[in-house]
Length: 489
Figure 1: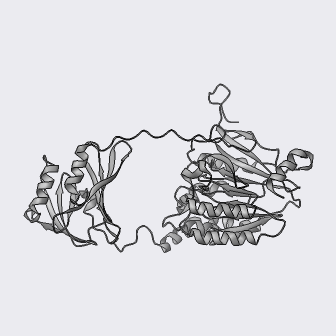
Figure 2: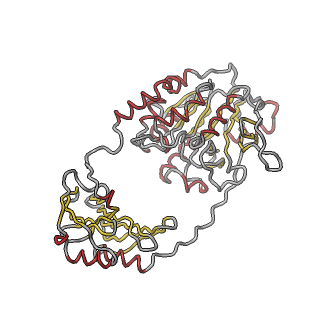
Figure 3: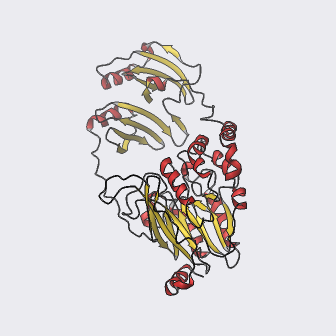
């Protein structure tokens, strides 16, 4: 039955719609006051346009023009915060990127050639064992003149010759900065001397190896693995014997352990108990094994409710390939399906580096095509679609969003849940209802009004007639009507 027809049926014949979790919702938990409200939040207010930043002063542009080669020109700049400008001088594939304070203090310069893939980045240039002292007299006079004009109150203190992946470079140290020079004297990069002259092996892996990450995950998460593994979660799904059931949707539960603990406790107090929980991703801040152990897992250990996750971009882990996540939830826990009663739940990875978008969308189309006749379908992913204009500022890319939305419409999906935007927001697109539930603990976005800019989770009740009804459970710091703090009860 189409979702719109189901809604009309429930309004016209409410007595025929029996829901399983319409009562038994506590109004307080720990230090939080809880309010329950109906679904729906179409409100959206775009933020005011940012104040136009003042352009770089002539003094800043003069510094750039003195250092960058004559054939380049400034074509891009932006004020980052209030304390530094990013300025790019470029010509064809060559880019010289400067960070400079409004007071004309150079913080950083790096070089990149998009055609040759050469990058000169201070702090990752000096090859091991290659640094040798160099007499200042070996630095080209033209370069010394440029440095003297830029730093009239400072003189070069020392010079070095080094080897880099881009070739041999001389280094002149002045005003606390190390300037890397090509053999012709052109300045290619510059940075604070303490970090810029560190010796770095370009072939050494950045961060931990996959073996080290998995070994650490085994040590820290081994005790939790059986509980959270996807196969175990599926096996723990217990039908009530009725077509009626309820489940919980929430997302972006990172960054606030106190609220995360309270929400899990509150879900555990619901009567009757939800059949399962779907989290729309970003369950921890970085995806490290110690975060899952110290913050995510402990509140769930006493909650006998299967827990399913649509991985978020913050869950990618130490090397960006979700190794810790997959260790805990199972190797097949990025794109997967589970069925409950006559409902199919499709969990999609549209956020991690481990799932190419093209492969994910091909898999999704196959799964939706193979959904058994008579089943209703719910899809959950982390990033919302850019096709809904009010979500486009923080979403999946437009091309993949369009392909995803087309699949949802063609296969008449009953409902789609997202996270990523830290708020509660709803929309309909091409006949399919969408809900963002990203209020599990991360800092809230501010575009969705008082009913949307709030920490929350969503209860989804499926009646014996197959109609799904939602309730939004919002969390506020416990306080009395006067606004003063009250003691939690």
